[in-house]
Length: 514
Image 1 (spheres, helix red, strand yellow):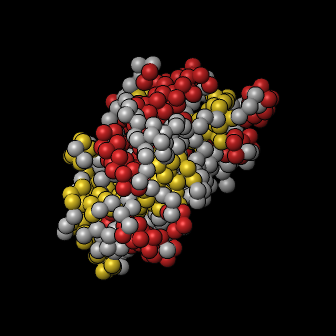
Image 2: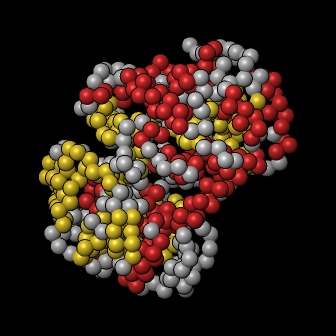
Image 3: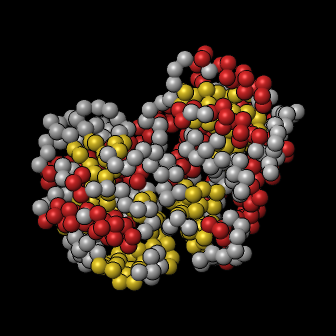
């Protein structure tokens, strides 16, 4: 059985995903055969593996960091929120039904639970989660597991299958990550530990400080006091690094209004920049599709929610969403739908991806996702959409604009294209494009040809850089994560944890779990 480690966090967005990826990249550079794992994920950013399984996109990114092919074993349970109270449950890469939060976390009931979930209990999935972890540990030298939220969610501990539940069942050592940029990191470390029961505390080996700015010597007295209070080691103080928020799973880290995501700070190759506005629709999914646009020198990407913010945009992207009809209503309520129609009439570029493609069509028949029945679309593309009970999960390969393209599909809506010019699996009419393919813009040659057409239609003297490689930029980001671990973490101590398990004799910090 291979070694293992669980990276927990004091909060959501403390840096668990990127620390896990960094450890995976550091280990694989040492010649260790390593795999990532997250027992249960809640995210609208997902990915399709080569075998057609849907998993969290963060785990796909971590698999790339580990230089292995992602699989359903790495994320056996994925929750995709459809409202504030319910989520679609994806088990081993396939959807098995909608379930209320109360039904999933231990209460009764679920909107339409699949056979594998009858009884509506999260804890019923613990066996599946542990079997997947055991299979990975039997195949790899090390498995680096990522927790979810905080391990000290005392109201959910009884049915936990992603934090201390699997750590205790699999005897995994735990390192807790805290975001010092938010403040209160020492209280968070101490409080997280002190709210765990004795058996769970015995697995918490120590801490990693994330996003530290300034002189590390000023932090050292606090680290020593924390060790005196908890008897636990701090395994690293990672500096704040820009541009490493890759494939977030919990949502956008910054305000949607006026937010700018730029992977590359470089001047444009041509005379003009290209401005891209992304409609921040409700239940936005796979917003990472536009990262490849932001990677281009001279392309500025903003997430917007007001019609006036579309006025100076050279391209408007309507992204994927877990609620196509809800997003359509939102666009109309906010006046964005009228602005999109005006753009289309003026020949100004619009791109719809997945759910965004569906709502650009003429008609939607939905008895599955929203159960709204017949709904009129925006009518910008000659497309009719019918929602099917089964979900399309695919990794298509094709050609568009004279260039090879790869992508992935995740959708219930089935599109009937009635006209226009073919574009991937969708169509194009004038300067309005639509496709179900996520990830197509990561194909470098296709992205350049597409941006050339956008610039021409927008009247911009923008020229795509001839050598931008999104894959190479992603590898550079992952190497930077590996460098953070190698240069700023106690890698010898981390390796001992992975190989030998939790240190013996860790003290109990009262009061413990209620």
